[in-house]
Length: 131
Picture 1 (cartoon, rainbow, N blue to C red):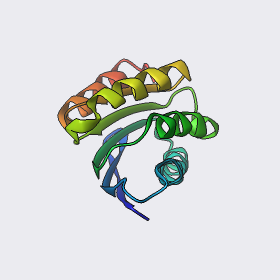
Picture 2: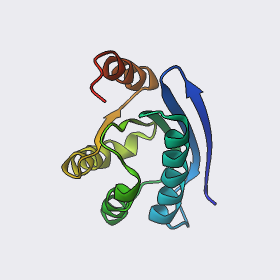
Picture 3: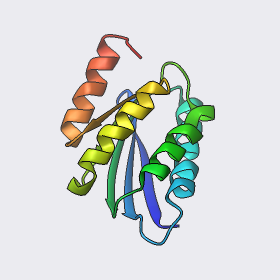
Picture 4: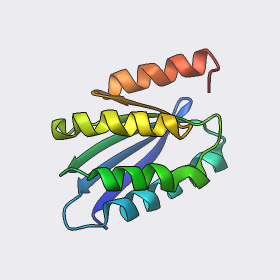
């Protein structure tokens, strides 16, 4: 696997930190495998909020982006909220497309530039019970 990730519980959300590379790997397959594990963990712990921090080298194609968003449909539930932080500045434009695509598919998903911003949004979502 080209992705390594660590899952931890923080207050009212699940935190996943992902490292590795998108080079020479099936990006959609790697992502879907990871997201399935995360979804199962959330459901077993009754957590609806996820802070996902990505430290991945390389970029993903638009095809991979759409395949990932479409592929996670079977693992999402209405209360799920995902704050997505990508530390690779090369992905800023693609992440805007990811956010819009996720929202079109009914996923409450927002992209952020920093972990603090993502965590603050999750805290606001939790405090307003909008998840």
